[in-house]
Length: 467
Image (cartoon, rainbow, N blue to C red; front, top):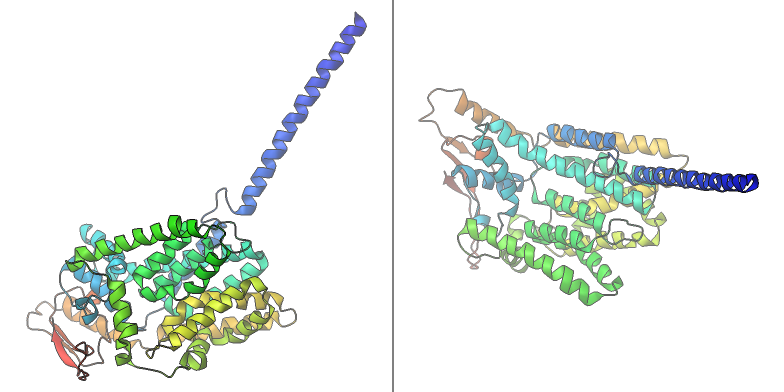
């Protein structure tokens, strides 16, 4: 009996030890799970990244916003803020692109929503009308920066991702453009975020529906946004085993929903069914109306535009192209394809190739990660040179067209009797913003110069337009 009791006690002790071991295993499993959460960036982090990195990026882009006090091109006002002001406050002026229905209301609707909220709260002061849309654009650009960092951390490692992130943040042209209310800026933001979900080797967040939806939205906002994505879409289609399923169950439904969304919005504001994407391509590509506003030789992007946009990143871009793995060839093909397509159009601008700049930053970051002896001098050179161009273009270059609007606002708000006051702007067409930067129904006149849309070849001369 004693032996049996001893054997029984040994048996129960064995069960207790086993259950204790199981409990330890469960504890270890949960510990591993928590550590995996930390490695993937979840568990209390923001946007999948360290919260301090997120706050730093947002704070940097907010500073970026307030340190850009110059004008770039008329479209940053006349295709967004002026349209939004007209939609909400029922006065202002719409350019010929809107009367001819070349532009859609999807992008201005974002800022019109902001204006409407400010109006309902009775906080529609002119300063808030100017800065809140730009701060919203800065926030979206910060999210895009973080998505680029996250993507490179998945494809490579944290070291390479940091250098790509550094190149993205210190790029003078990105600093100059990323807080402006340009369709090109939104196109670039959507391109970066879509790339985060694109099926690349090593990516953990690939999602065909998400990335195609973002590409479709970019196309709705600016139809030429599809140009950089043509090589990427063909690559995805070529590597996809279930090609018919990809088209029928993903691409076509996404395209149908986004196009329907655009048609409904434009039907509401134009008062008739309008396919603005077709009108845009017809006027700017088929009829080449854009050449009325200037033309350049075919090689301009390769000889001037692309080197100027890259700036001092250019040698690092070339070095990175030579060192980067083969899986990044699709990025280089995308850059070259975009430059070639835009080179065939006579009207060329720096901002048109802005969406391919993040692709270039991948190669620049890869170059920096492989530098050994010259890394610190290279970093200092990149930072200081880009900071100089960023501050000059953001605070000095083409500043007068915004400063004059300050004087006009003072005329409206500091004088008690302005019933007989009016403004005549003797400057090139649409050089300045308009009522979005005044927010007062002051009679103003400016030079307008719409192109010849009759097809008779008559030259269009500047004439006065009064509102």
